[in-house]
Amino acid sequence: MRYKLFCLLILLIVLYSCRSREVTLCDRLGQECIKIKDGNNERVIVFDAKDESSYIQLNTERIEYELDYIVICWKNNKEKLEIVNPKAVVLERSYDEEKYDFGNEIPLNSKNIPSLEKYNEMNCSVFDFDSRIILPEGSLIIK
Image (tube, rainbow, N blue to C red):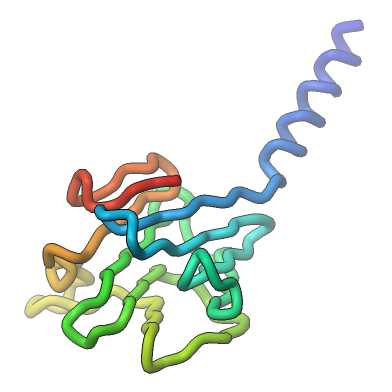
């Protein structure tokens, strides 16, 4: 009986870990939203949660679970929505580059160390997928 319960528990853990996750992140006013779908080492970022035609599909295999985060700058100085998902590998792009910008590397600071300094702007946020921590606090709404 214990063996069957143990096998059932393992099966449930495997099924739970393989399920896809979806999160919608919005700017602090709730006016701009992106949708992120995760599952099986793939991530799809939809640049406009109301229109799924603008998206990027990523392979997330190279991303360490504890360091899985995304940087979002809502209508930055280039008047584009900018998203950075470090170490993600682009599989497919389908978006207007006049409206959206995507990167998979964090810029280096003056000491050649990857740094989020550039994103310390009022309209930028960092979302950690593991802990669901948002920096700066209150800069995003999770739906």
